[in-house]
Length: 257
Image (cartoon, rainbow, N blue to C red; front, side, top):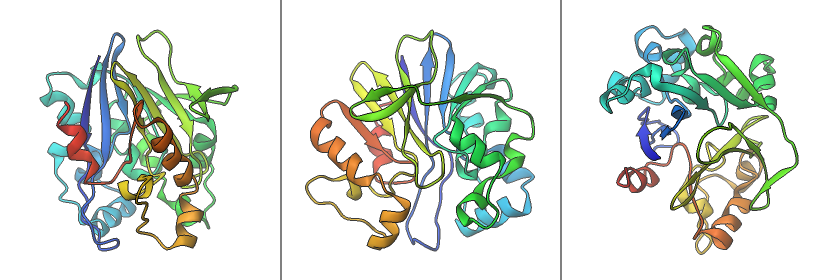
């Protein structure tokens, strides 16, 4: 197997005033390519909805088509049709914008997140971040539900069978109703894509933890940070964590490609 770390959407938001990325994974398997999250897609830049246009303006996106997963897959020598599976941490627009660029892929998601996206609570600001345009093409959804499995003390769901390593959905709800991490088994140990379960690597530092958010906001939006910090403390030799948008984590993993 081979794992590629891709930035599929550079961000320069006004708040918080910090550079950001959309950290996605591309994995070579014996059943084609697996993409973990998609970042922003081609149409988000070329024909966006008004909401997507507002979002990309607010994050001061460079709107670089070369950053899309579709363009990066091709630059790596593959075809977009080689992406057979997409595994999503959740369905917010900066994680699903590339779905239309891979229309043949099976799209794996936690059933609770699928329900939240298909039936969003309109008065909930978090659930206004779902953009139906991203699945208007009719993806091949594969919804997953809990079945009693555990992974390092966390609930988990095995995403697909028939490949030579494990890919798991790890429920880390809070940022959204069905938000998950995605755990990938590699010869060197586990990778855990934490999605938006934390914002900065400093939050899961077991020795010097620090959150960029006020305490009440962190407890409300990022309730799993203490568990993830404990995972680093107890099993950091077996599991490497990273989140979706931390620009300081991304180069470390990118250098391993």
